[in-house]
Image (tube, rainbow, N blue to C red; front, side, top):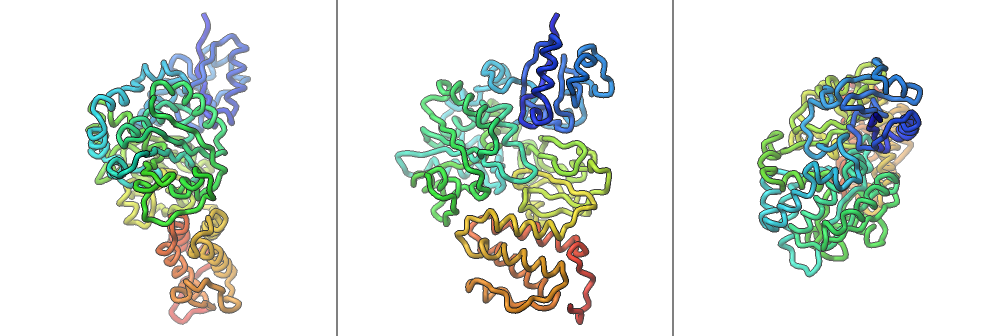
Length: 515
C-alpha cells in the first residue's frame, strides 16, 4: 500500500529543498501531495504522513521517515505542536491542510460559503457585518474596513473598482505571500464579496514581481474561479518592485500606467481613485478575513476576539534572529515577550535579544523593557510604534542600532518617489547627520537645506546641536511628508537614539558638554 506524503510547495519550503525532497519520496514509491505551508518555517521542508510531522526533511532521510523512524526529526502530530495548537487561526485555518489550487479542497473546507451568504443578504447587510466585526485594515494603517467600504458604496459613480494591495515589501513580512500561494481562492472570494458590497464589477490585484510563485498560483486560481465569481472580473497586475507602491495612491498611479508617485489627499481613493472612479483599496489579509466574517455567525465570533478597538486575529510574522521563525495567527492583545521569548524561542544565535522591530523597515525598534506592550493598534501608537503589517524582526545584542538608524534614512532616500521635499531631502540629510554624530564630528558648515525647512531646523556644530538637528529633522519628515514613507522614517531613528544612545557613540552629556 502506497504511503501518502504531504510536503508544502510554498516558496520558502521550496527554497529549503522541498522539491528535491518530494522527488526523493516519489522515487521511493510514495504518493506525494503538495500542500500549503503550516507556517513553521524553521522546520521546512516539513514532511507529513498521517498527520505526523518530520522536519526539516532531507532526501537522505526518506527511507527512515517512511519506516516511521528518524526520531530526531519527528515532531509528533503537527496539529498538536505547541506552535500550532496555541494559535487562533481564522485567516490561515487551511494552512498546511489543503492543496492550494484544488477547488474541491477549498469547497470542502467551507470555501465559497461566505460569498453564497453575501449574495443572499445583499450589500448593506454585508457592510454592516464587516463594520460590526471590527475588522481594520491589515496593511498598516489600521483604518476601519467597514467605514471605507461604506464610503465607496455611497460614493456616486457609474463604475467602481476593488483593488487588492499585494505589494508586500516590508522586511520580515510574508503573510500575503503565504496566503496567495497557499489559499488563493480565499483572497478571490474576499474580493468578490467586497465587490458585491460596494457595487464594483471589476477588480485588480497588484502583486510585486519578486513573488513569482504567488504570481503563478494566483493567475491559475483566477482562471479556475472565473465562473464562480462572475460577473465580477479580477485582473492580476505585476508591479516592478517599488516600495512606495505599497502606498495606495502610488499603487493606483502605477495601475494607470503612470509613475508610482504619491497623490495628495483629498480626494480620497474611496471617492476618486482608479481612473477617477470610487475605489476600494484593501490589503490581502484584510480581504482574506472577509469570507469568514460574512459566513453565518462569523462577524460576532471575530468581534469577540482581540482587545480594545483591535478586534479579531492578526497573522504575525516572526523573523530575523529568532529560533522558531514562522507565521503565528492569534488574537490581538498578545505581548512581544510571549511572541519572541515563549513562542519564538528567543534568538537563533542564543544571545540576548537586544531589539525587536515591528511594522517593517519604518517601524520603531522596541527595547526589551517594553516587551509587555500588548499587540494592539492604540497601545503601539501610544508608545510611538507601529503594528503595520504584523512583521516582527528580532535582533540580538550584536546589532548596531546606530547603523540601523542610519539605514532607515538610506532606505527612505532610496525608495522615495521624490514628490515631497521632507522625504526626498530629509532622508539624505538625516543619514549625513547620523554619520557626523557617530564619527564625533562637527558639522563642516551650514547644512544645505531646502527652503521649506529653514524655519524648522538649524545649523548644528556641537554634538548637542547635532542631536537637536536630528530630532527637528525627524519632526519635519513626520509632519510634512505626503505619505507614510517619509512620515514613519523617524520611528526607527528616534527609537534607536532613545534606547541605545551608546550605539551612536554618545556618552551621557552635561549641560556644558560639547564636542
